[in-house]
Structures are given as structure tokens and as C-alpha cells.
Image 1 (cartoon, rainbow, N blue to C red):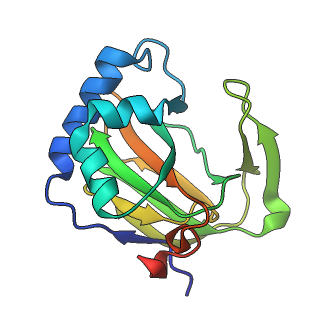
Image 2: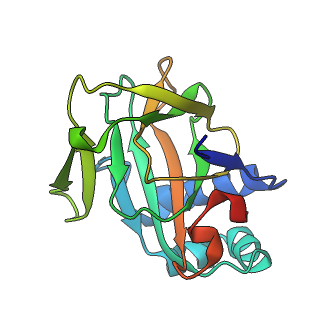
Image 3: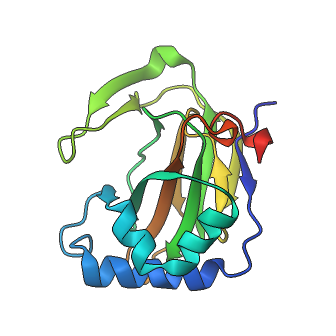
Length: 184
């Protein structure tokens, strides 16, 4: 069976999530101009959140990109496959309880490469009514490493007190951990 994710044991992850939220509120316009995928300057964010910088240094991770993911209830089915298919960290920031990342098996013939009008990044959209077989689902209550090369979607199970915000962290693609979850 394909490995979809692995939870990370980071005792201060909530402190880090709160500090990232402070960065989003005070140093970005993400909450004023909401879109699903929001690149942030990873050097600025790491400078603002020294606990996150310390964790990446302890793990000997070279961060190369960070994005904030914004979703509101009710959320459309946004099942997709990321164009950057290296293993990444996914971190809860705000309102992630009762939200689930669901991983699927969907044959590639149902994938269509599309360009995001917001930032020019590519991803693979999955055609509506494609056959889906659920592989796993996780409630994002602590950081995980996950495989973005698998079709996945965020499902919000109930109304939230504001948008659901999570952070995804990409790191050096030569690092063996970027190639396989089992390397974590």
C-alpha cells in the first residue's frame, strides 16, 4: 500500500501555528484577498517565527518554499494533484479541527494539467465524477509529512469559526526525505 502521510511529533507545533497566524494577519493580505494557495516569503516567515526556524534547523531541513492554504466552509471539491510532487510538510494553523485531508487513488487518465490564474503555478485538476478510491484520510490536528503526488482534497465536516488555514513547507529536493515518506 502506498504511504500517504506520517504524523510528526512536534511538541510546540501549536505555538508555531499561532506565530504563523500572527504573521499571516500582520504581514500578508491573505485574509483580505483570500485565494486557495498563497505563497509567502519563506525567509521572512522563518525570521518572524524563530521556533519554526529552530525546528527546521534541528531537522537539518533547507526550506525552499512555504505556502498558506486558505479554505472556507462550505468548500468545493478541489481534488487535485500538486505539480511539485516532492514530499512536503503540512502544518495546521487555524480552524483545522474537523477538517480532513483525504487521499485517493484516481487513474491518471482523469487528471488535467491546469495553470492557476492567481500565481501561474500548475497543478492537476481531477475531472468531475472521476472514479475515486479513498486511500486514507487525516484530521489535520498536528503537522504531517504527506505525498502531494497523490490525488487529495480537503473536506470540511462542519462550519468553522473563520477560514481554515494550513501551511505547507517544501524543502531541498535533493534531501532524501523529499523523495519518500519512509525517509522520515
